[in-house]
Image (cartoon, rainbow, N blue to C red; front, side):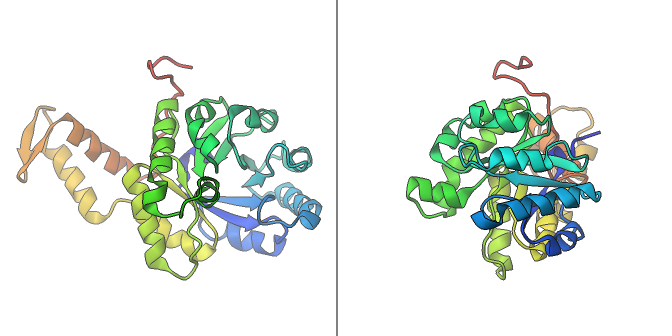
Length: 283
């Protein structure tokens, strides 16, 4: 059975200090709900947020939790509150900029989503992705833009997004999870961000409002035209040899793409692979 974190496309944040929103988030249709104990929670309410997250998990909730980063003075308390809970699907580790920051969280034996938010994190992305408990990489592009002194535009963020995609592929992980779209009422901007994420090879997205779930879920699935094209390719290329279908040369890479499209009709996230090194040997 595939890990829920591996298989997910939509990841919806909800502030840990707003338990009144937990149920709405859980019923939003998001693949994964992330109770946020970090940026969304003021310092004075961290304890309250931990208690709310712990209570939700104890009552049967199934969620991920974003914990505070190493060095914040909050991580140990976060892990004591939620670590080991049966419904804990994963831990999102904020500000993951080197593999060593994952060691403390890794002691809980829970799948980790490593949130890359800095130049150092992008530079160490493959080492982070290769850490045994890391299930996905995620991109905190707004913090990354601040770190490098750039606008968070598609152009400025392209190198980092591509670096995370390559790191995930090299480490045998599903495609990375793209950052949030902060424009809550701009569906055009949201879908433009999803299109760009798909173009570079990302296979999921962080969300900040339940209304973003449905359009993002639909956008990550291949449209009818793509599915029909893929089926035509596979129907016409039974021999595996290069053939001409509809004016297009169809050979092994095109067939592989068609197969991937049809897999995405079942799950937009890339199928997880065994973690491997560049040489193809199991790491």
